[in-house]
Length: 190
Image (tube, rainbow, N blue to C red):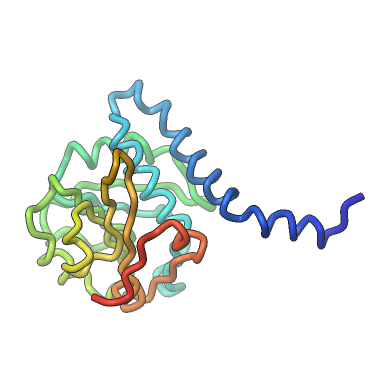
């Protein structure tokens, strides 16, 4: 009979594999969404947003009950596709609300604000509006981080990678799991 210590050692040694398996399982669970007209690229984005919600901790003052609200800025098609992928998902007993945010004036109430490259040409106004608040901002351009965004989804070699802006995340009072940071390009300065 294996001891608890040997089990912990087994899990600790394989932690990166466990995290990779979790990420893969979420992407696989979204594959069934393709039949509903959601493209694979939007499914992958939804999978990343789900996992960011999973591996980011919000301050207790923001309330940890009720659904997780994801605002999608300026692109109704992307908002609908992400809704199709996430609206039936739960995370720690919390569902997801996906809402279209037409302009920077509609950002209130979102825990995650996704700014797709098709949504706005320059995200700086939106980022200024939420800077220092516990709203995780996610974008899709290489300039997103330098504009003050927190996480940028970047396509390279037919794969999506992500960069994390630690100063912006820390200013917002958010905490990112070290498990997530293992897979990120971490930016320590703005």
